[in-house]
Picture 1 (cartoon, helix red, strand yellow):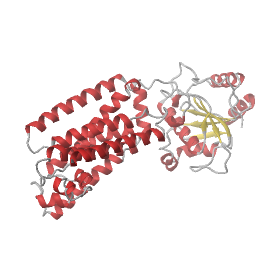
Picture 2: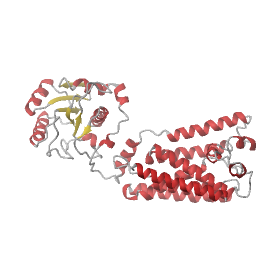
Picture 3: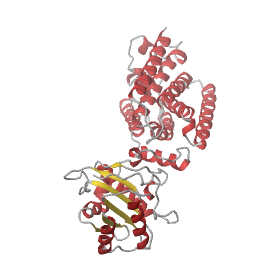
Picture 4: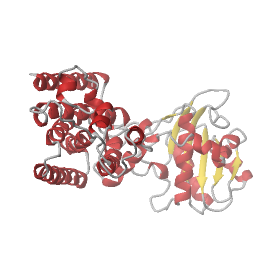
Length: 423
C-alpha cells in the first residue's frame, strides 16, 4: 500500500472559495464511516471543525469482504468532497496533489453538482495515476472505477447507512487542529461522542418499574402516599434496619423507591434533564459510577444526619443521586475549565449554584425533605465528577490507572461514610 508523502497537507481544502453543499458533506461523512467500519485508518490530519468538507486520506487494509456492504479495495483512498462546477478545476487540483508527493491509489469524489462522465473519469485517472470513482449525491448514481463502484453504491443503501451510523470518525482522527473551546466544535464532539444516551433512560425505567410494583403491592394508592410497610418492604433506608440489622442493600435500593406520584415525577424530570447532559459529558460507564456513588453517599449522609435520632424513620428517593449529578456537572466544569467553551463553564457553574441554593432553601423550609441525603449526594457527586471527568474524544481519554485511582478514592470515601454513620 502506498502512503501519502509529506506533501499532503493536514488542512487541505478543494477550494477555499467553494461551498460544499450539506448533502455532499453528509455523504462524505457516511463514506468516512464506511471506510472506518472496514478497518480503515486516517493517514492525514483533519480539522474536526469541518472534516466532512475536507479531503481525507484513509488507508484501507486487504480483506476479502466488508462487514457492511461490498469491501472498499485495499490501498490508500482519497475521500474528496467536490462541488465545483468546472471539471478542469478538479483536474488541476489532483495534478497539484500528485505533484506534491501524495499518491493515493484510489480517489472517491463526492459531489452534488452535475453529472460525471465515466470516460472523463478514466482519462483523468490515467493522467494522474490513480483509479477514480464519483458519487453523484443528487442522482444516487456512482460511476468510475469498477472496484470502487460497488462499495460506494452501498452508501445509498439504508440498511448499510444504519449499520455504520454509530462509527465515530472524530475518535479515529490523529493530530486534529480545531480548538475544543469553540462551542460549535465542542457541540459536535459531544454529539458524536454520545450519539445515544441509554443509561439515564434505563435508570428512569427502573424507577418507574419499582413505583408500579409498589402500586400493585400497596393497593394502588395512586394519588396518596405509600404506606410505611410498603416503602420499608421495597427498600427504604432506616437506621434500625440498615445499620442495626446490617441490611446494607437498602443504601442503594432506597434510591429507586419513592413516596408518592409527585415525588417520583419531580425526581424523574430532574433525572432526564441532568442525566442526559451528564451521560454525554462523562460517557456511559463514568456516568453510571457517578450516579451510584452519589446515591450511596446520599444514603450514608442521611443515616449520619437526618435519621440519626430516629431508628424507624424511612428515607426514600433518587434525589441524593440526582443532587450528585448536579455536583458532578459542577465538578466537570471546574476540572475541565481550560478545555470547555467559556459559555458552558459559566452556564454549569451558575446553574449549579442556583440549583444548590434554591433546593437547599426549600429543604430547610420543609420538615419532610431529607437534606442530609441531598447534601451528601451533592458532595459525593462533586468528588466523583472531579475524578472521573474527561475531555471529549478524540482528545486522549483517562487511562485504566486513572480510573482505578478514582475508584479507590470513591470507595474509600464511601467506607469512611459508612464508619461515620455507624459510629
